[in-house]
Image 1 (cartoon, rainbow, N blue to C red):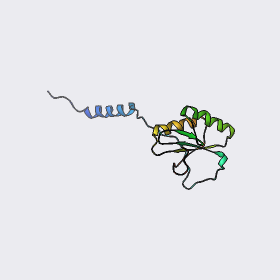
Image 2: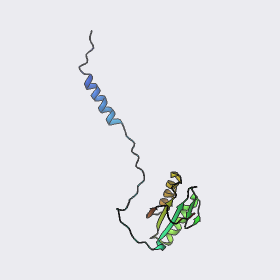
Image 3: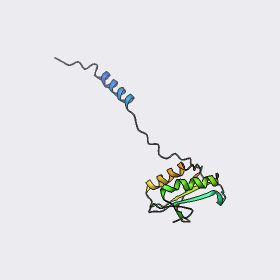
Image 4: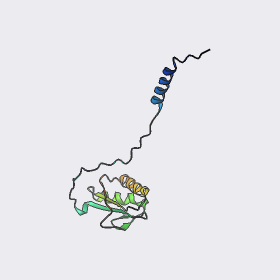
Length: 127
């Protein structure tokens, strides 16, 4: 006795459609940053810039004063209250751990800083 295989392609097609419809794909969104256009620069008065540095050991400094991560949010919030036009310039050493960079970036956003500049670590250093 022979097994009927005429409907086998139909069943396979229905299974493929079922798995395509019911499977969800996790999409990692990454960091939500708005980057400036190439060559777009602006002169900013020094009083409107707050420098935040992170060294290779993960220490954080705000304008040269070492601040623990737990106090970073209140320090930046206080400076933003004094100057609402403040731009936070974040410089991170190339040897610093990525997690520290993300933690500092999160704290800056939670402090209300909407204008954050991620600067190159070369040049002046804070630590």
